[in-house]
Image 1 (cartoon, rainbow, N blue to C red):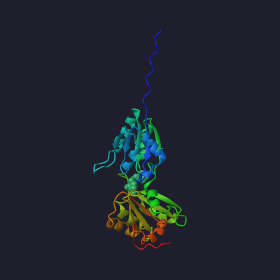
Image 2 (image 1 turned 45 degrees about the vertical axis):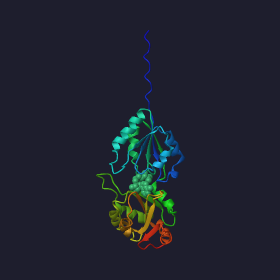
Image 3 (image 1 turned 180 degrees about the vertical axis):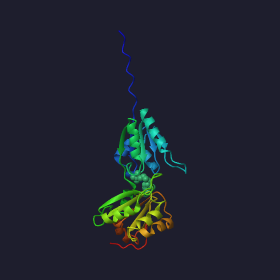
Image 4 (image 1 turned 90 degrees about the horizontal axis):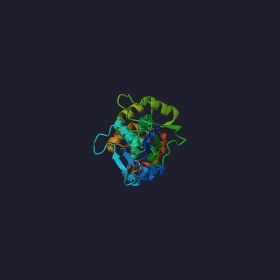
Length: 271
Ligand code: SAH
């Protein structure tokens, strides 16, 4: 009788966790993120991740930077996805560290699809998204019920070939439905965003611009919508910034004169 051939060893299948590193302050990591970072054997670090969070990594973990560093072009998305798949197939415990929350403008949708198609287990670990970090630093609620019924998170940077956000429609909806607008990646297109929003939103709609939210280098400016671009330019504010637009910011107007860090431009009426 012939012996059965031995079973091939089970393929080494690792896993990938998409982990939110928060907006900047390393103390804003969740406990779950800390545990995932500590357990990782390979860590792919995105742009805008504060490297201080790597203090939780194992000394033996392999750390790969995949964001734009030192003016270099960022690693192409397809390459990152391939790398995650190949490392997981080798049995590695891969952590993909992203700024803020991985599910907010983090390209996680594409990555989850690619990983699932490759049969790899994916976990998502939330982080605090930049806008919420920024709002906490301003002691302002995104949905103060006297001023807003909800919030819209929008990108100012569309993917190539996509006509991008319809700012006029958005402004109309925000006004009709009393929504706060939160714009990510809005610095480069600020002038256009301002001009388009002004078709439907009042010129004195308050705007807070927060750069480097939650980091020691944080700066913020308060202005009216008609002064958005001017304020960014004059105050030399640069990416990464979140733009917070709507009446929930009106309460901050009174701080414009008293809090050194918040400088007001335009005529914002405190409510
Ligand atoms: N997933 C991230 C967003 C990635 S898109 C999150 O949830 O926060 C990148 C954009 O996020 C930046 O262009 C900027 O608009 C915003 N951003 C990220 N970190 C920031 C910070 N510390 N301060 C202000 N804006 C920030």
